[in-house]
Amino acid sequence: MQRRQQLKKTLSTGLVLLLGNEESSMNYKDNCYPFRQDSTFLYYIGIDLPGLAAVIDLDENKEILFGENASIDDIIWTGPQPVVQELAEAVGITNSGSMAQLATLLNTALASKRSIQIIPPYRPENKIKLAAWLNTSIEQLQQFVSEPLIRAIVSQREIKEDREVEEMEKAVSVTADMHLAVIKNARPGMKEYELAAHTEAIAVGAWGRLSYPTILTINGQTLHNHYHGNTIKEGNMVLVDAGAETHMHYAGDLTRTFPVGKQFTSRQRDIYEVVLRSLDHAASLLKPGIQFKEVHTQAGIKLVEGLTAVGLMKGNATEAVAAGAHTMFFQCGLGHMIGLDVHDMEDLGEQFVGYDDQLKKSKEFGWKSLRLGKTLKAGFTLTVEPGVYIIPELIDRWKAENKYASFINYELLNDYRSFGGIRIEDNYLITNTGSKKLGKDLPKTVKEIEALRQA
Image (cartoon, rainbow, N blue to C red; front, side, top):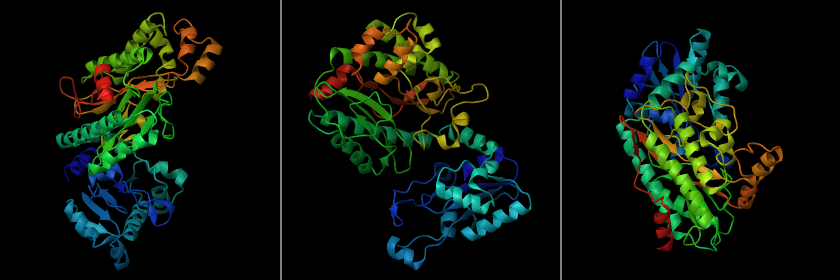
């Protein structure tokens, strides 16, 4: 109720339509994917059930919940369910109606030329419903997407309430348990999927689920690698990027990289230390008032300094990052917002969530993958995840062009073609004076990781 009141204060007129999600069929009608409610609907309406919608009438200061009451045929399969009016009253909404009544309300609003405001729909079934209700095509739904509504939601959701932070602490702590289980149980000869099973078991065992499909791979140079069929061997590193989502749907998102054997090789250790120093430096810069793009830049400079010491890069680190040479090794962004979504509010548009009127997103290679660049505020929750990824195809292409040859030691780099990738990631809350790492401690130093591998 408080969240809806705050939203209404920032908007002026018309109807705000918030759609919940439906069940979505997996391979036939009655076999559905696990249901996941829309996060903005959860934030403002708070009901974690499919097939609902809500309207906030700004002109009449009225809120209505729409849905269908369960039939006896439904109840046979699902058990007794509260009627829509009971659901509405439970979250402080006085009025309720059926989906047919919602369609009538929207038709009447259209005829009266009242403003109808929606956020960008991402589910196909919701796009189809909206197009029918609003008497338009799916392609023309954009005319109803309201930038003022998006901006109002982002400005509210990006500042986490204390109770949200508490839930995120739980999510990150469960995520840490997932990673510990993987690191402790990995043995040469296992399949990646045997390790990936630990992540889901622990998330479900904590009355939650995965916050995104687990990345667990010996091919860490592939940034979003969801294949789990490889056999892990002595000398490999395993990169595991996995997160838990709590029962309240708040997300954790951590990454660790560890050796399959009991110790890192000397090369692995050297590059791991480069990434860790970048993470520690970036985390030390987090505070209100700094642009996250600048934190990304400084993390990149620290990476280049380390890679120069190893011999893979050369020249001035600041100049190398300004030129973009660091993107041979660090092709992605340093981090993103996190909350009810693992990439928080990404459905609302990166230009609103990660950037602002003072900072536009770059279109340059590497920089264009930075999801968050804007000035940090107290209450933001975000990830910090530097990495070094050695991609043979990128080496070949840039070497053929002699690209950034004054900064990249291609002769030595060619010897690292089979190295893979290393990423280390933690989650942070921006406080009034700096930042706080979320969740229980998850080991990340070389000494700590190797101690776990030898236990």
